[in-house]
Image (cartoon, rainbow over the protein chains, first blue to last red):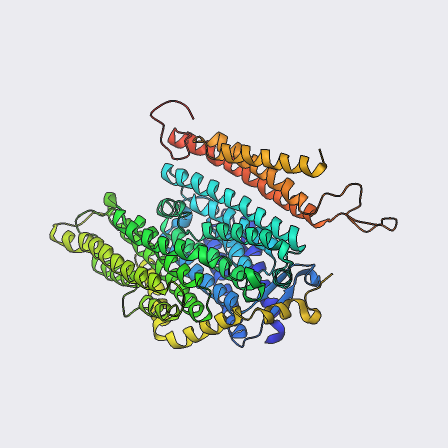
Length: 513
Length: 115
C-alpha cells in the first residue's frame, strides 16, 4: 500500500487533467459518454482520496517530487492529514454535485460543463497538495479559470454581470498574490513552502518588515478567496447568479482560501518564525467576526432563497475563520471539523434551494407566498434539515462543530468576542431560516391549488443527491468522535511543522546555500 | 538616476495607472487597468531576482557570476496566465455589453454622464 502512495498523490492531480482534456477532445458531442466519463473520474477520485486519508491518518507525511527534481529546487506534492482530508471532502462533494448535475440536465444547458468540472477538480486537488508557493498560484489560476466557465454556464444577463465582477476581482487578487510571492522570493530566495519555513525562521531582523508585508498581502489574497469582510462583496452576487449545482461545488472554493491561510499561517509564518509567528491572526480575527455578523445579518436582507444560501456561506466562513485566526492547536481541530461540516451543509442548502426553485415555476426561489408545488413535503423536509445544519442547531454536525469551536477558543485572547458572535449569529440564522421556511411552506400551504409544471428532470435523483449530502452530515455527526480525533491530529501535525519540513527536504535541514 | 530607481518608478507608475483604471466604472478601462497591473507585476517579479546586467542566467564555463533565472521563468508563467485572462475578460465584457446593453461593471448606467 505505502509503495503506491506517491502514485496516488500524482493521480489525484493527473486524473482530472487527463479526463478533462479527454472529454473535451474525444467526447465533446456525446453528452451521455461525457457523463459516464465524468462520473467515473469523480468516483475514482473519491477512492483515491479515501486511500490517501487512510494513509495520512497514520501520521506520516509523504512528499512526491515531480520529475524527480530534488526539493527545494523542484516542485513537490505533499500529503499530510489536512491535505488528505481536503481531497476527500472535495471528491465526495464533486461526486454528489456531478450526479445532481447529470440527473437534472444542467450540463446540457451550455457547452463544456464536464471538461470545466474536471479542470475545476484539477485546480482544487492541486492547490490542496502542492508544497510550492508559486505552484499554489498556478493551481489557483487553474481552478479560477475553470470556475469562470462554470459560473457562466447557462449564461443569461444576470449571470454575465455577476461573472464580470467575479472575474475582475479575482484577477486583481491574482495580481496581489504575485506581489506577495515575489516579495517572499526576493527576501528568501526560495518558493518551496518547507524551505520558506526554514528561511523565514532564520531571516535576519532587517528582513522582517518585508516578510511581514508579504505575509499580510498573501493573507489579503486568501481572505479574498475566503470572502472575509470587507472582501466578501463578490460572493453573494456570484453564487446567487450561478446554477445550483455550480454554487454547491463552489461551497468548497471559499475553503481553498481558508486552507491556504491555514497552510501558510502554520507552516511558513508558524511558531518557529519568532516575531513573525502567526502575525496574520490579530488582523484576521476581527475581520472574521465581522464576516460572521455580516453574513448572518445578510440572511435577513435576502429576497430569494439562493441569496440566503450565499449569505449563509459568508457567515459560516466567518465562524470558521474566527476559529482559525486564533492559531491555537486546540481551536484548529474544531475549525477543521467545522470546515467539513460547513462545506457539506452549504452545498446541501444550495442543492435543496435549486430543487425548490425548479418546481415553483415563475416564483422560482423568491421568498413569496405561492401555491404548493410538486414534492412539497419532501423538499420542505430537506430544507428543514439543511437549514438546521447551516444554522448549527442540534442534532446535526453544525451544532457539534460550533460547540467544539467554542470550547477550543476558550483560552484564546478575544474569546469573549468569539463566543458572543458565534452565539448571536446562530440565533440570527435560526430566525432568518424560520422566517423563510414558514413563508415558503407554512403560509403557502394555505393557498389552494398547485403550480403546474412540465415534466421534471431527475425527480428522484435530484432530491437523492441533496439527501446524500445531508446523510453525509448525519455521518459526520454520528462519527463525530473519530472525525474530530482525526481533525485534532491534523491540527497537531500543522502546529509541528518540523515533520513537514523534514519530509519535504529530507535530513539536509533545508538546502541552505 | 540609477537603474534601480528607474525600474522602481516605472513599476510604481504602471501600478498607479492600473489601480486608477481598475476602479473606473466601465469595463473597457477596467480591462486596460488589469493589463497595466499585470505589466507592473511582471516587472516587479523580474526585479525580485535582483537587477544584474550582462550576466548569463544558465551555466556557462566562462561566467563568473550569474543572474537569477527563476524569476524569468515565473514571469513567463505570469505573462501566459495574464494574457489568457485578458483575452477572456475582453470577450466576457463584450458579451455582457451585447446581452445587457450596458458596459458598466455594476450593470447600471449612471444618472449623470461621464466615467
